[in-house]
Length: 302
Image 1 (spheres, rainbow, N blue to C red):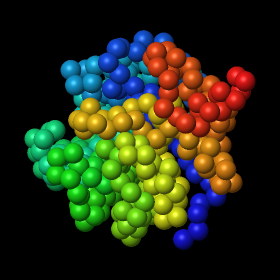
Image 2: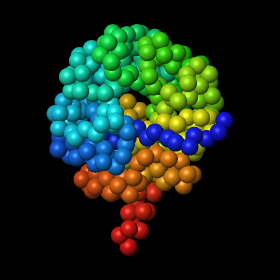
Image 3: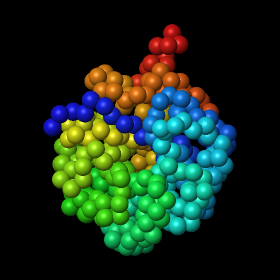
């Protein structure tokens, strides 16, 4: 299969990137982050989540964030909403896309939400119906698609099964997520090949964490499998609150540097993203984990 010549980057730093930060990030900083990402040219930004503040206190100001951002026509602002209460809040906030999430690992599902994979996805049925009735996009994320912190290996058949269930719900896009960052390129290629047998490759996204330093190699393997949508987080922000040791999402700057070097179009301004990464890392009081971002920023400062 030929490598795509154009790729969509879903910028997840405002939600997936910030949700694990210990200190509460002020609402105005979250808004500025989203506005700057919008200006940098991202066509899809994961803005916030509407879940119980008890579980994810960092996202408690989701409605305020969505009300304050400067939206650009043609940009999708996605939010996580796992239940009807979350959907109602997301709809009121003007979300363009609703994201639901379930695991491909039975052990992960039982440990975190105390039910089976099938039961967890059945719970999304009313949400999916409401999303479709409202004319919004629906995205389904498959967590632990390449490994689980509880059971270890995850069978490819289980990933395909979740993808099939998401299709039945009417998902417009399906994310294959390496939640704990254990996947390797050959494994990724096998999983993507299996999922593309039932889902159009143009509707599949790769979501990789860089715990073991495999993210860029895994993206390359996915590109070769015909996947043209990738999630990334500026400055490499993020992690997983339920997966011990999982580091941040692959850094957007690193992904853009690689893709642009391959002659693949993204529509995103790398220089602007480098500035954003340095700015948000500075606000958080630490250096960002993007190698390309830090190297290019140092070169600009020299």
